[in-house]
Length: 151
Image 1: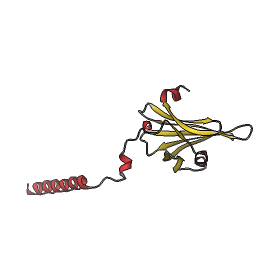
Image 2: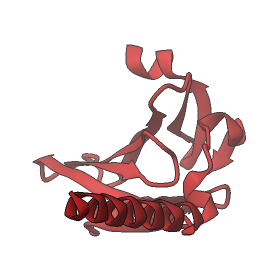
Image 3: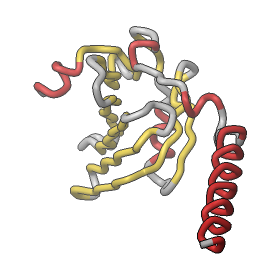
Image 4: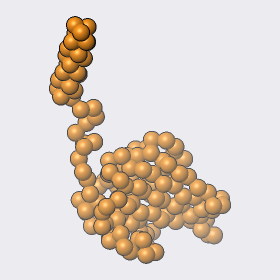
């Protein structure tokens, strides 16, 4: 009987110590890991550095790329696909935007020029960042996800 009481007291003390330590232990990671960032917080239009987008196609694993002065892409390349030698696509799971994925395609045109397409979508957000080309200048615009999903 005494053995059961002693074992119960020891278990209670160990549980109390473990819970007490868990409540005072700091969270792992930085404060930025716990911020909820939405695509709506980005400017409606911002420039894109296509050299950085192009560099993503030769990388693998974790990537960090300053694709724009307004946006540094941090994430994990989760898929790379080459439909043929002229078309390559990649998907990146973003670590700074919870539930977000970036998709980019690089297309070699018949005249030898390279064209880029892409977008960034975030789960449970109504907005999307879409990569556009106008007169050889690439930029992101913030639009409704409905327009991306309809295309």
